[in-house]
Every structure is written in C-alpha cells, then in structure tokens.
Length: 105
Image 1: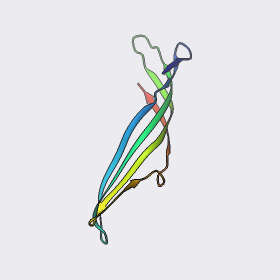
Image 2: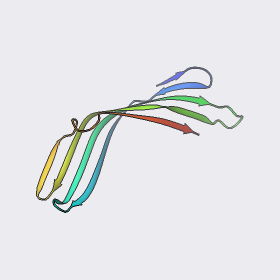
Image 3: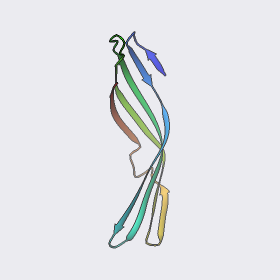
Image 4: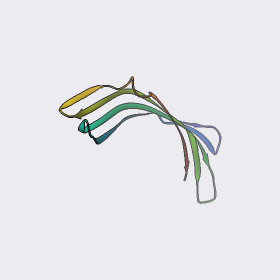
C-alpha cells in the first residue's frame, strides 16, 4: 500500500508472510554429533518513507523506516546420539523483531 504525502514523498506499507529457518550441525564431546533445526512462520510489516529526488533524466530516491516482525509459530528440532526432540519453540525465543532499514538508489 502506498500513500502519497506530497509530490516527492510517499509512505509504503508492505506486510509479508515469511517462512524462515536455520540448520546447524555440531559436535559435543559428551553428546556426539547432533543437528539443530529451527523453523518459523513470521509476519513482517515494513513501513518506509520514500523521498524521490528529481534530477533531470535521473530519478534517485532515498527510503528509510522500521520493519517489525512477529513470529506467529515456531518449531525446534534437535537430533543426535540416538535421540530426537521436536517441539514448540514459542516459549524460548523472542516473538518480536525490530529492524531499521535504509536504502539509496
């Protein structure tokens, strides 16, 4: 969604649903080889203020603003030494992520 504030300034809202994950293999002397996997369902809402700079035939712009992410579901899997754990990770990870973004083009 784009809201025109004036001729050169716009406000952009771009909500997204994302699936992110990570996988890490590690070795522990007492535990042996193991694999760690994380999967998360995330809703991110970036809010950007865009400034268009009209410079003749070149049209550079500057965008800046925050992105807020909410983890709505997450799982954690650990496998190794003949055993496996799989469960909900919502209680052990933070559910809110805040990032500041800046773009020049």
